[in-house]
Amino acid sequence: MVPFPAQGHLNQLLQLSCLISSYEIPVYYVGSAVHNRQAKAHANGLNPLDVAQIHFHDIPTTDPKSPDKFPMQLPPEMYATLNQRQPFAAFLREMSEKFKRVVVVHDSLMAVVVQDVVMIHNAESYAFNSISAFSHASLIWEGLCKPFPIEHPKELPSFEVPDEVQYFVALQSEPLDYRAGDIYNTCRLIETPYMDLLEKEEIFGKRTNEQIQELALGLEKSKVKFLWVLRDADKGEVVDGEIKRAELPEGFEERVEGVGMVVRDWAPQPQILAHLSIGGFMSHCGWNSCIESITMGVPIAAWPMTYDQPRNTSLMIDILKMGLVVREWKQRMEIVRASTVENVVRRLMASEEGDEIRKRVEELSAMVRQATEKGGASQLELDSFIAHITR
Image 1 (cartoon, rainbow, N blue to C red):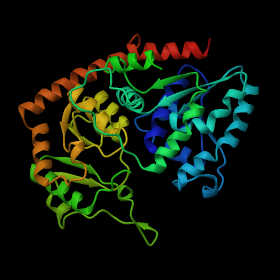
Image 2 (cartoon, one colour; image 1 turned 90 degrees about the vertical axis):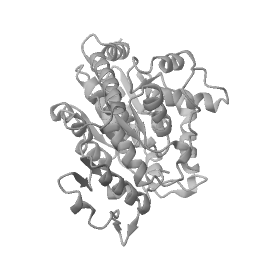
Image 3 (tube, rainbow, N blue to C red; image 1 turned 45 degrees about the vertical axis):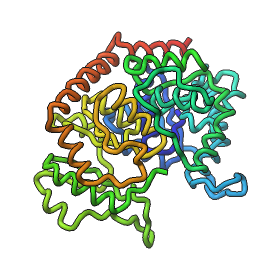
Image 4 (tube, rainbow, N blue to C red; image 1 turned 90 degrees about the horizontal axis):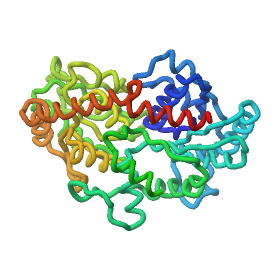
């Protein structure tokens, strides 16, 4: 397993690692020591005994500051990632001598790192796609400058990323051609047309203090009980070596005591969503969060920020109809006012409309849980993959 060093990506491949390990196949989770520790520390909703079965292999990282090698300034984690190719190739050769067959499952953003798999006679690789099949398929067709061949409720939001990220993604293009296949972190029963289509065809915006203030006041005015995970690291502002804390309205936490709680650090999202008292989830609609929301049967108040999130929002709200939109993507440059936050929260939590959404989400959740049980659609898909790589 070769994950991309970002928490959402680390977690998805760690979950798959535990699933494959349950078939009594040795699984090696490969990354820098720092990111392997991060993956283990934030093993969302996983049994510690399952995680203990995974072999975490630390590969050395060289100086991430090597701007002369690339035509534009990349974030340090991307430089560090690109420098992992040689140590990974050495580990791959070691594994190829130890085992009859080596199967590399790599994040689609790590194709450059694992490209030497083509030189190993008993190795094959599979790209793990950490976004929805809907987002992936629609992006492919957009790149081909062709109309998306499957009907959808409305015009798809634009997909905008910084130039340096586009460049990094472009680096993966040729190495991706070496893969033996693709894996999608989804359930075929809810994304059937998009999975079928893929089989046939082969910046985060910083939340300004003004926006945080408006969100806080909207939650307060809604009178709905809430848990707000407001990680200071998300602000991305560093002063004198320390991350600047996001500013809440004066006296806010005291006023909402007994109704709301603000958590400034990482929180165990799957366990929170699984709690019986949770009736809604305001989320940026990253694919991890979408899957957890569906699985736990929790409606979403969608607030997409960037990357695949606007299209995930379209899937969750317009197609699956399992929530409400806080901010439409075409209005992403505007501040969402407290009155809008209050209105969406109340509609989701205390209205007939919200009750209908909750009923729909419960039905989808039951469908997905059934798919993961023995003999279910998702379990059969995994069985098929295991049978293929152990052929």
